Image (tube, rainbow, N blue to C red; front, side, top):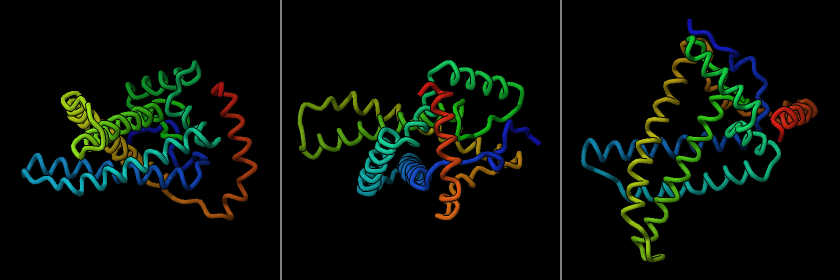
Amino acid sequence: MIPVTAPYSRIHDNRPNRAKLLHLLLLSTVAFQMIMGLMGWLFGWFPFEWHVIVGQMLIVVLLLQWGWLMLSRSGRITLCYFFPLNPVGLRAISQDIRGLSQGILASPGPRAGLPGLMHGIFLLSVTLVAAAGLTLLGGFRGWWSGIPFRWLLEILRWGAVAIALQWIGHVGMVFLHTLAGDPLWNMFKLRSAHKKCSQTKNDRTLCLELAVTLDF
């Protein structure tokens, strides 16, 4: 069995339900866009209208995601996990990479480290591609002019490849954690109101500790 530094089932997940729902919506809309692109590549049939509709839904999800990350305390702490560019975070990333080189899976979090950084890179990649897609759509429909079409198409093309590779890695890690007896789909379990009330004090303490630890 593949060892895991800290199984998800043993980690206190203090993320609010809205964060879990946004995560699920982001993964679902990106997965749909990837499936549509794959269908177009394999079968020459690309449902453009569905691509546009789901793309607009994805942009709404991204706005909500970034809004939560920037405007809420729990979101700002999560932002530190996504971009742990401080000595503590970089040390955690280094330890995770060293563990992977020895066949040990990194704990998925929520915490600073390699998994959080990969989530941050994925979010940035999706945001960049979605923004390029919206700009192109506006140019095609006459919402604005002076659009660098060729440049934006290159962003879409290579951005889609980067997202696909990250997606494969993401799903691959889920399977590896499952083989290690540490299924990650438990991260989408919503907390009940009673459980949230009973953990409020602990969550506040944890948030303060994380903020101090991450120099936030």
